Image (cartoon, rainbow, N blue to C red; front, side, top):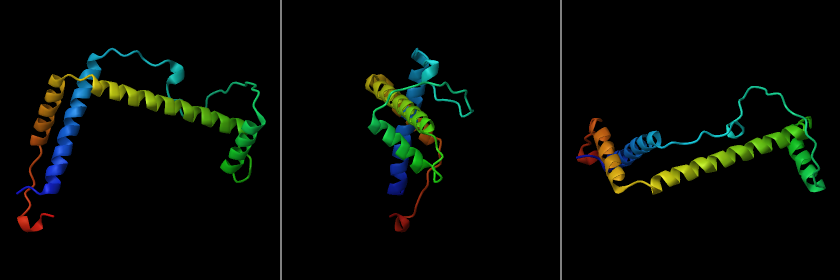
Amino acid sequence: MLCHRYAKQRLTSLALCGMIYGMTKRMRSMKTASLPRSMKSPSRRRQVKQRKTFTLSPQSVALLEKLAQQRSASGQESVSAVLDDLLIAYGEEQRRREIEQSTHKYYDQRSPEEEEEEIAWGKFALSQFPSVDVPEGEAK
């Protein structure tokens, strides 16, 4: 008899395999515009920075200075580095939200036939793994 825990794992794997297959198949068929270069995540190499001048409120300056001091025990972290990191983090969060919206849109637009096909592929994928039989006394 198959342990309940293993059955639950197989069911979860079934759904996951089907979803991955269907999403991959559909994304290949969808024509997506590539993101502008400015929206791509920045490379980890040192890039040449540009000097810009901004006028900020006293509260914003105080917050940036406080964050700079918190980030560096010696107080040597620059305010511009803190601001740069905040803007990069904001851009990454925006990109994450775009991906999340795209994923929701994909699943909302699937036809019943596509869902059935994903389930079938998931069942097939799981059938390729050996079953684990657990004696009844050991099932929890």
